Amino acid sequence: MYLNANGLQLDPVAASIALEGQAMYVCVCHGISEKRLHQAIEEGVCSFEQLQSCTGVATCCGACEPCARQVLDETLDSRSRAPQAS
Ligand code: FES
Image: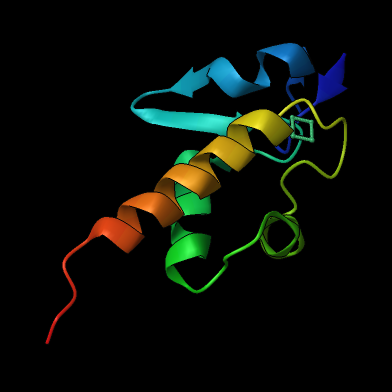
């Protein structure tokens, strides 16, 4: 068992599905939400290594890595498909 940022004892396997209200926690070890990952990507993060460095996601047990990579890939993909201002 692991303690998250709030001191709660949690199973890291459940990290990618932890919910609090409407916010989805991707990383329970560090209490990092999907919203925080989106914010980092909007601020310029464009690789998984940068996402780890900026937020700390997937730097403890690693159970959240697949979900964090998926959030990064989907967010970058949707951004590249967005119409560009001319
Ligand atoms: S859930 Fe353990 S490092 Fe993210």
